[in-house]
Length: 442
Image (cartoon, rainbow, N blue to C red; front, side):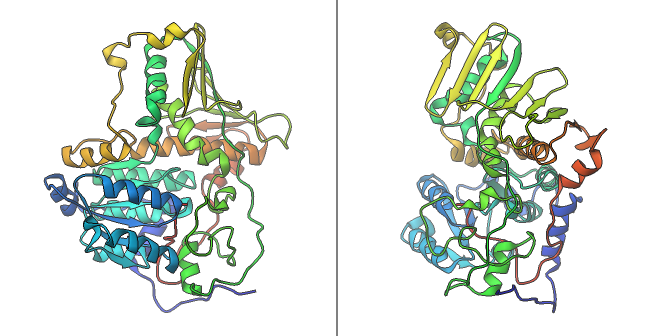
């Protein structure tokens, strides 16, 4: 088997700080209340933008940003040479990217490029190191969902974003897009249009599993140091193309299935649909207090998360989001909005329950930078949604009821020790090579 080589000569101190913060949720000293670059961007007509990671999702976002007003790409970081070259051809062919520079290492780009803001589209396990370091440098951040791989990572990101006061947008674009079906549903729930909410059914995929993929030879254009960068803070393992596809690809890689790197289908779409439930229920800064797994230990559906007021989030169902109240129900999906009585959908929503309607998710972020205001999907909300997905995954993994304190963000009561141990995941506190994982969130 080809092992990842060790490079014990020296470590970058900035990278060490960010990695420790990610794994231990430690406080990170930030560059003032608002970084100088970010403050300048708020009053500038042009946002100097960098992107870390380029896969299918990165490609989609890059195309959208190249159509957005007021941005200019000055940096692109990607560990895979084929994907990096593809991205640079796309960027350099547009006047908004004619001066863009390519980087292998995301930290090199954050350190050396003249940036105002950064888009993080790496795999989930690398979100924290890149997002935290960007906040430390006072850069505005657009980070793909799920915000984090673990509860501790998410708390560290949310704290870094709050302390830096940058405009931080989580890629939970159901709050802004998809025909505004979800925002309308959230408004109607807040408005009391279906009465007191009893249950919310969320139809998403399976919880994560352990990664047991066999070792494969590295692609011809990737070095062992490149693979080390892809792994970043994750535990060392050999290359497999299912995790990191060879060359430029047009599919969503299956690193998402494995708890070493992500949260399974449960978190992949749960980061969207549980997010809408939290938003509609006004729980963006809180969460449930009890996790009740299904009686069948082999089941991958049926887990319930219960809030202090008794409302249940149920991981089950064939629809994206179904809100059930004592006066009716509402179902919201990417292609539909329906209710037990069609008249519910025509209800006039009181002003205090109305939610923002930006043109789209990227526009909201760009406007938030210029207006020095919060985004529609801030880091704290993204962290709380990711935490719900992680609580559910831990519940399935342990197969026993658990008690969670959303204020301290720790498990209490029976089985708390085993559950709290899973607030983080095994990995490399300081990893070898030249930098953190910067491959595509694809």
